[in-house]
Length: 170
Image 1: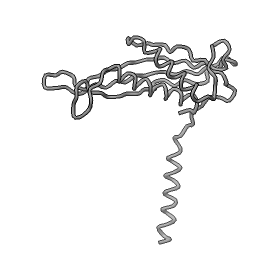
Image 2: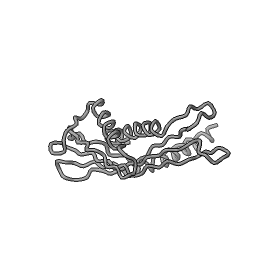
Image 3: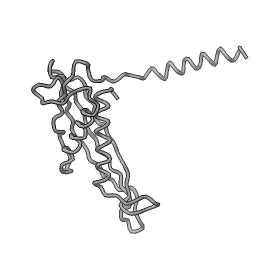
Image 4: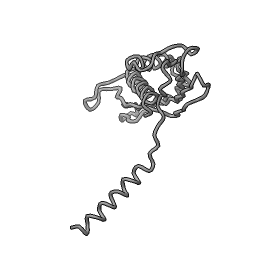
């Protein structure tokens, strides 16, 4: 029994060591940033007016958390800038007449945090994305939804991810 225990413990230690070798901690919001500006997100897609919704949802996340205050760019310690880069709507299932029955909606954003006091970029996170699938007809017991309902679901999740990335580093 002892003969197998020592190699097993050694193998476990090596596995744990290799498992942690690729970990790189993400940088979170520095403690000296107490006031954050969140300007209107830049919409680089053809989808109209989504930037207003996600900007407000993200600001609401920061207000609900209460660890930083939201202010204007001139007086803020940090500036959080977000670009909405891609809006991909893809049909994924079809009926026998090749009419789409289910879609996948995926939205990509890029996030940038600037230190307004020292005038430097703290970090950038390109290609953060969220997606959902939805049926446009009642299929397999799944209720029919519109693209707008799916869009709100994806934008809500994206605002939460932008907030978590900014505050917690993930």
